[in-house]
Length: 239
Image 1 (tube, rainbow, N blue to C red):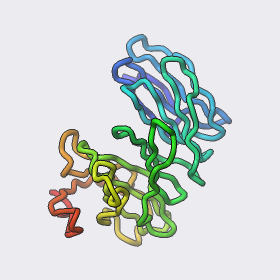
Image 2: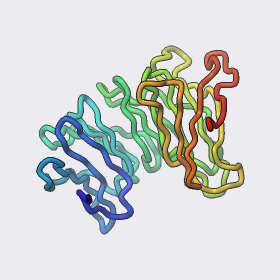
Image 3: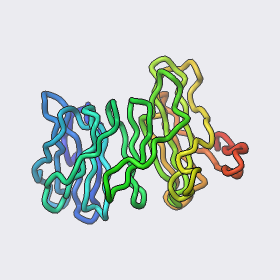
Image 4: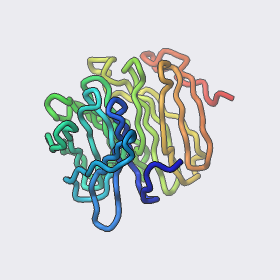
């Protein structure tokens, strides 16, 4: 059953489970709004307007009371879903914001400026820019944080190949290790153009990473060694 008819170019969607509402970007024809749809009533509830270009990413926060949105306009907007008002702007990226992920008090973002940033949601300030960037000519397009909040995984896009997946220490590590690239691995061949378009951890398992690529493959990876000692962190494909 089709609930909502959207443009084929729609890139972002987020579900407010408690409220039974879905939010999605509506790109094209100068419409840079975020639409809201009530799943129980089967009707549109209006839109959120504030971006100056297409919406690329959405993420829920604060018990589904807050929505974060990223766009080609390089900024992240924070929305109060109880009032439908804009609460603030998180600025710092120098290119489009392709994915967002909330974990604890932190919001993570990745951009085609080839950076991943961690933001303190209470202050809207960037507290860490992750180093060990993806290869030149590629950029991170998807991110996810492990359930125990210790690791972040990112997947990249490269029109000329050299895409990669990186595993980073997230905020639960604390101290100087926060934001360190722990290992790099690949799903696509080095010369194969495309992207690792989606990354995820198991719902309750921080030792399993799942990645999907534009060649139609899905891979599962196991974190098997001590990342703190930077040994071989991943066992490779699980068949």
